[in-house]
Each structure stands twice: as C-alpha cells, then as structure tokens.
Image 1 (cartoon, rainbow, N blue to C red):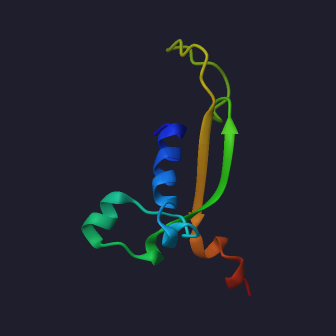
Image 2: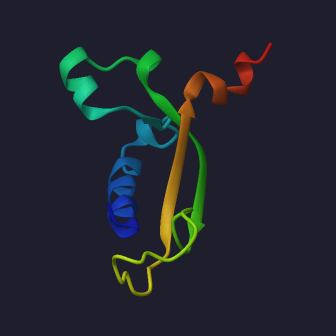
Length: 88
C-alpha cells in the first residue's frame, strides 16, 4: 500500500464523526475471517518511521535493486503493551 492510498482511506474514515478519534488496531486478516475479530488478538501501532532502506545491511550481490524509494514503516506490538493506562 502506498502512503497516498493510506491517506485516502483514512480521510474517508475521518469523514465519519464517530470514527474521528477511533483507536487504530492491526489484525491479521485471515485470522479475523476464520476466527472472527477480537481485540485480544489484535495489535497496536508502536512506532511509525520513514526509512531510506530496509534494515538489512550491505548490497545484494544477486539483484541490482537500484535506488530504493523511501518507505513508511509501521511497527506494531500487542496493544495491551502499548496502553499506558494498563501499566501497573
């Protein structure tokens, strides 16, 4: 998915007044379809970064990848770990 596509989709979601402050969760699609959606099995966004290249060092000796465009990487973790209100 390109950043412009993500922006378009979130813009559509933001047009719903009730969704403007909605929590964003990540969930594996196949699991949601097969087992049903459950907040307990979803994940939350832990970080978002712009990176110039993947974190793999060195240059490939097999493939000439050429200049790589910058990527927006969304990291995730269990949303219960990310919710500071649950800290003990």
